[in-house]
Length: 439
Image (tube, rainbow, N blue to C red; front, side):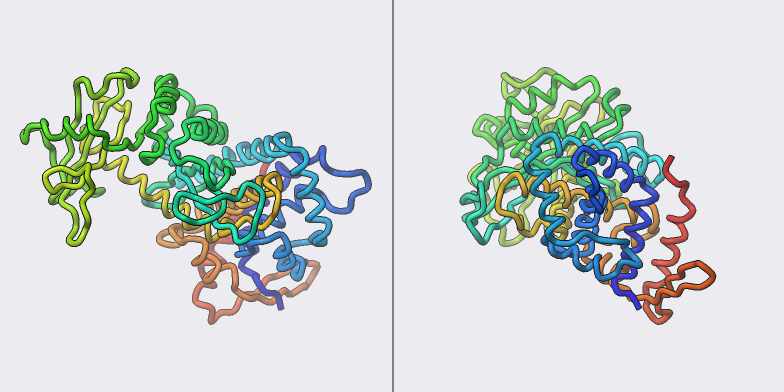
């Protein structure tokens, strides 16, 4: 009998995606002579443990207990030594891991076909900050703006749209007191995210960068505008006094009804485009679109709200599209909150190591785990199952027990017929095994 038998879905995803060979090749410089365990395999084992619900290096013991499913797994001291070695290498190790992930991502999207996030010809990257609470005095832990204590990573996620989830493409570990609207950090994360995408999305405005109002700074918008020939942006803006005064002057005829995803008119919400001197000092081609809506019962208005209406604003360089459609596109940035929730449930509830350099490696491990939890449904699941978040995948698929039978030099994994999701597991395995082996 084997536990976590459903984890074979992740193991097969690693193999079909070629992630094992890519990570192993990337970490070859860190393999010592006569080493028993491959550094790439060690790092992937930790990522698999995190994908299965682990939140520290020692949780790799779950895989070690089932060598028939996960193969030979290194000891805890060996795992810790590798993390220390990679942490000591700094940016060199991080670049190697990121390059391997980018290479595999391109291959996975090609395998996924119409299920890939770029099937529509464009890719949307959402940037957002994550507060990670620290319960001990770890390096760079500091008081946060939410009256907590810990770290404030800035992350980027590719949005898979309404038919899927999303995958991480960038993560920058920052101290807890790092500013929400620091333009330098947003530029760094945007560069890391763009480096994870295939090169064909660096022309023809096939990539959209979305942020909340934390990204609405002059420096970051100017950086995005300089790449306007191939990059689109949709950036939230703070309602300043100048914007507030311009909203008050917008005539009633200039307001357009907001729309929902299906094209239905949103009752009690309108959008308008602001022009004139409110755009002074901002890059050419930037459009400023404001939304007003009736607040829900019991909501407290802000000082920047006008005439009893809740105001929000964003900037974009997309032209020749209705402002209601652009406002809906920006509002769908809220799906990034789902990605953050999934990240917290996948190793980002806390940072388990003491030094910042070690936790940077941990952040890369978390991203690999999230990649697998996005790639496996994209390649192997269909229908509503593609929308399952990590907690549900673990409960329904990964935790399934099985029986490993060896017969005729073959190993067969048998799953319980009474388990309600056995059909999902077997069908997903069939789809994965039908994929071509990586070249």
